Length: 496
Ligand SMILES: *[C@@H]1O[C@H](CO)[C@@H](O)[C@H](O)[C@H]1NC(C)=O
Ligand SMILES: *[C@@H]1O[C@H](CO)[C@@H](O)[C@H](O)[C@H]1NC(C)=O
Ligand SMILES: *[C@@H]1O[C@H](CO)[C@@H](O)[C@H](O)[C@H]1NC(C)=O
Image (cartoon, rainbow, N blue to C red; front, top):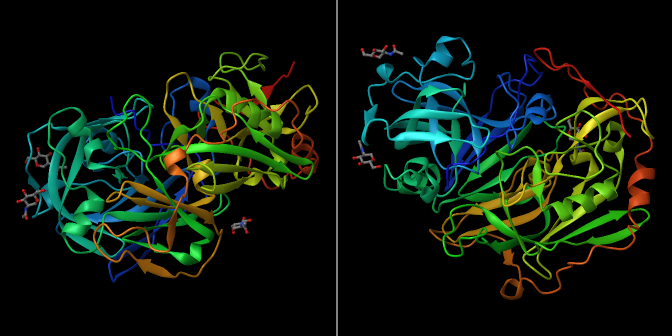
């Protein structure tokens, strides 16, 4: 693949949003390494989303978006850096202090100067590191080995990339499969033990697995736990799912795709089982993508239920025939709706994650100037239609509602309903190398995963009414209207 791994979101902004750029090191003990990750709006030059699209680039921008960042240290003596956490890619890389982007003063998240590290070694061919992401940003440079510290755990010898030439002003922590490392894709290197594996090699954790708890949209920080789970951060069953091969490649598992087998809309007025010709659909869990991208037939039903208006990306007026480029918006007041969608995985009696409307209504992007919502603030809605043949993604709009364990040793993920804002912690480490996820049970029907999937669109949407009435209350203050940067104002949406 042409490394179309997104590094997600933020920021065309000059808006120095209110959240600070720090993550707290918590502890490293007993086979687990734990650090807090901080969600924040970054202040860099572009808004990014899964797809590069002009309108998307200008509007996905405010404190309701944002990357999940982690504080780390690298080199001897240690140099401090803040990197973006990304389950959709597999290399940890840092920006070179001497790169033009840093010389231009953009590297507020820290940069790395090999000249100042006595333990820096280049091991692989010069120029072997080259990564590019779907938004067409990229980084090129070398692979190197050095000391790396994260969450209070220190690795003596992690292979990383250094971005000598890049248009991204901060590095990333890619925690995906080694087979998905950029240099492996391009054939310049053999897979190397990346962060989750090197932690095992150096004895910090017992098995290459980690848990991510992103927490609420309104909250600034979540946590990343290597080598264990935190039973205080979820409720109900923690259900294990075999990773599901993405389309066209039925053997290799190199990304975190699971089988989406149902979506249910639930409101005070009723419950609808939504349909898709794509069920069971392979969807990638990608913390590096802000929005979720679902099959168009399914996205359309979700939009109907949620009262979404589609804005054509080519003009700023609404369009009647939908295309994957259309931008879904809703009145910002819908954030107070009590309705939710239930996402089902792994066949009958598999995992179900409830995603409330309050997690799906993102930043304000403009104002309705006509139609039934005339005069109301318009917010981006966090579920979009994937374009034909592109990867289906459950991004942060889904992941915040789930406690997710990524197990690279067993090619499984485990999902449970998250508990928001919990401040306690009950960490359970994995027992040993390749042990299954603690406290989890397997989805029982994965062998017959297609059983009972709904492929026929409901004739009536009984939940639709409840989605709207529950959301009728205006909630002006909840949505932080944020001035867009550089000449991009809030748009007016004229709805035909
Ligand atoms: C590191 O050293 C090299 C060689 O002396 C030099 O060209 C380069 O500018 C130095 N980099 C930084 C960031 O000072
Ligand atoms: C670091 O790890 C690489 C393999 O990733 C190995 O080739 C190299 O010898 C190691 N260096 C040290 C100093 O242990
Ligand atoms: C979690 O905390 C945030 C920020 O303090 C708050 O806005 C939000 O409503 C809380 N969420 C829940 C579900 O309690």
